[in-house]
Figure 1 (cartoon, rainbow, N blue to C red):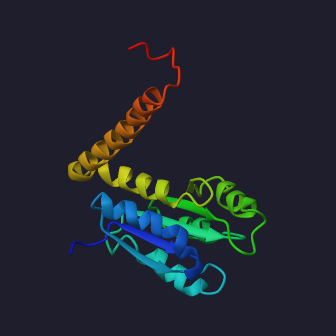
Figure 2 (figure 1 turned 135 degrees about the vertical axis):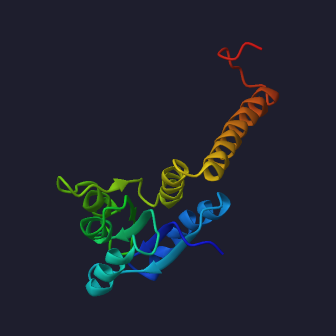
Length: 173
């Protein structure tokens, strides 16, 4: 097993059902990762120790998911120079997810956090792989193949609609 390049962290184990999507796409793309719980509010010392150790352990990107006040991504970003991708999680104590989105999105100048959609851990995993892919041709090639699969799915949908008899004047074939 290779050393992990991406750290996937979450504020609590209840976030795993969302954050698993990042793990799944990274696995599909062949990017090694680690996954753990680091709570900004309940384990602040663990957060600081984790963030301080990421570079020396060889990580290149952090994907941090959190719900509610969602301070985890920003706090990690305040301690490390690695890129941090924030995943706002709609949690049980959430205000329809908006509190999480705004907590992660509205970072102060000098402490950027790339932010994906609410519960958008899959896109966070893809973005992490794209960052890794800037220096890893194998990962870049897998991303290219993945994008081709997405394109093929859309093209298949277009064919299925035509077969079903729906009119489409855009594709005059």
